[in-house]
Amino acid sequence: MDMKNILNLRILLALVLSLTIVSCSRNSSSNNVSRATGWKINDKNGGFQYNDKFQEQETAPGLVFIEGGTFTMGKVQDDVMHDWNNSPNQQHIQSFYMDESEVTNKMYTEYLDWIKTTYPPEEENYRLIYEGALPDTLVWRNRLGYAEMMTENYLRHPGYGEYPVVGVSWIQAVEFANWRTDRVAEMELQNAGYLERDSHLSSSAESNFNVDTYINAPTLTYGGNDSIINPQKSRRRVQTTAAGDTINRFARRESGIIGPDYRLPTEAEWEYAALGLSELRSYNVYRGRKKYPWDGQYTRSGKRKTKGDQLANFKQGKGDYGGIAGWSDDGADITAQVMSYAPNDYGLYDMAGNVAEWVADVYRPIVDDEFNDFNYYRGNVYTKNAINEDGTVKIVTPDEIVFDTLSNGQVIARNLPGEILQVGVDENETYLRTNFDKSDNRNFRDGDARSSRQYADSFDEDEDTSDKSNLTSKMYNSPRHNVKRDSTGQIIKEYDTSNDRTSLINDEVRVYKGGSWRDRAYWIDPAQRRYFPQDMATDYIGFRCAMSRVGSKTQGNSKKRN
Image (cartoon, rainbow, N blue to C red; front, side, top):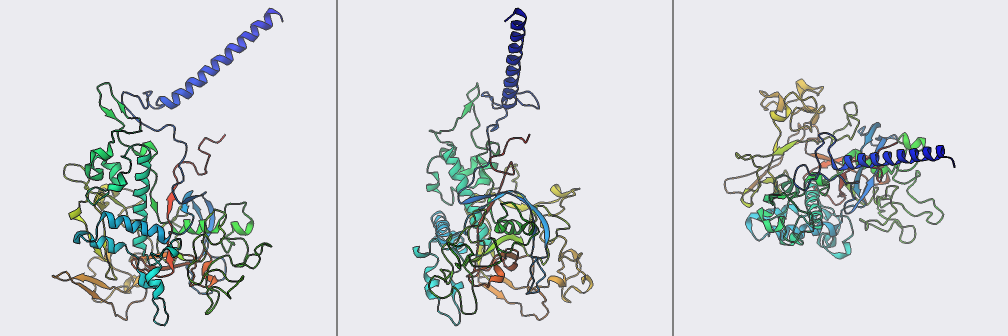
C-alpha cells in the first residue's frame, strides 16, 4: 500500500473517531445537561431532579394494556327496544389499561378489611365509614323467590371469592378505586425505599397514606410520622448538598414511580375495550358491525373443539338461566366465576354477560360527538385543593369527616382523614378560559335550561324562577326524593309521589354497560347502554377499574419514530 492510501486511511479513521466522540458527547449532553439552559440535571449538589431514564409506564396490578385508536361507537344493529340512545358515531380513544376481569368478592372484602382495621366501626365517629362501604346484600331477595343463601353467603363465603362483587353502587365503586390507588402507590414507594417497609400495616385514622397528600404535602403523610416517610435504612439513593442538606427526599411526579390513578372506565373506553379491536380490522369491524366481544354473530362457539359451547353467561330464555344441565349448559345460573369464558383479543374476560358494569359517565340519551370525538366523557366536575390561610393544603382530620345522606337514606363519608379537602374550581381558574367556564360540567349542552326545546314550559309552578340558571328542564323532570335529618339526628325520608314527573334521568344517574346473568342476549352487545341511580345497587351490576396511560401510545415504543 502506498503512502497516499495510508494517509487517506488515517484521515478517514480520525474522522470516524471524531464523529463518534461528538455523538457520544451529544448523547451524554442530552441526558445529563438541560437542552433549555445548559445546567446539569440530577446534579449531586442539588438543582433540578428528573428521572431521565424512565422508559414507559409499567402495567399496574390486575390490569392489561389496551392500545387506543378509532372505532365506531354505538349500535348499527336493529334497535328493537326503540331507545334511540346509541346512534353510531366515530370516536378516538387514547391508550389505557383495564382490569382483566371484574372486581371480585375477594378483592372487595380485602378493601372492607382495610377499612375495618383503619377506621374501627366500634368507634362512633368511624362507624358510618365502614357501613357506607358495605355492599347491599339484600339485592338478592325476591318477593316470589328463595335467595337467602345468596344474601348470607355470596359476598364473604370463599366459595364465591372469585365471583364478581355485586350490590355495589357507583359511588362505592369509585371509592374502591380511590382506595386501590393509594394502596398500589404505597407499595411502589415502599419498594423504591421512599417509605418504611411494611408501613401499611400500621395504618390508622390518624396515620394513613394518601397519594395526593404525599405529592402535595409529603411531610404530612402518615400524620407527619417522619420515621415512616424518611426511613433510616432506605434503599433509595438520597443525595446531599455540600452543606450536608438532604435533597430528593420524597418521590415526586418527576420520579416516574407514582403512576396514574385507578378509576372507572369511561363509557367510550369500556365499549372500545369490549369489542376487542386489536387485530387487523376488516371492513365490518371498522364500520362498527362487530356485534360481540368475540368474532361472529352467534353466542355459541363455532370452533371444532368447542362447537356449541356458550361464550358468555346470560339468560337464554324465559325460565332458562343456563340451559339444560350437561354439556350444553353455560356453567352458571347466577354469576359465574371470573375468567370462566375465553377472553377477547385484548385479554379481557367477561366483557359480555356475567354482570353488567358501571362506567364513569353520567347518562344522557345522546353522545354529543359534534362537540367532542376524542376520549369522550360526560361527568367532569373539576375540583382543586383547599388551601389554609398560611398557604398550605387543608388535610382532613378525624374530627372533620363530612358525611352525605344519599337519596336512599344511606350515609357515606365524603372524605377520609389524611386526604386533601377538595373544593370546586372558581373564577380564579375559569376566568377568560375557552375550554371550560365552571366546576360542574355534567349538564353541559344537554338537559339544562338553555338547551331544552321546551324551555318556556319546563318548570314547576311552585319553583323559584328568579335564578333560571338552576332550573330543571322538563326534558329531565325527574322525581325529587328528599332525605334530611331532624334536630335529634333522625333521618326523615320524603318520597316524591308527584304525577308531574316525566323522566328518571338526572345528574345522579350513571351509565352501565354489558349484559348480565339476568339479561337476554340482546343486552350483551357492547353498544347497548342503560342507566341506574349512582347511589343504588342491584344483583346484576358489578364493575372493573381502568387506568390512563402516560407517554407513548404503544407499549415498547417510547423512542422516536424514524
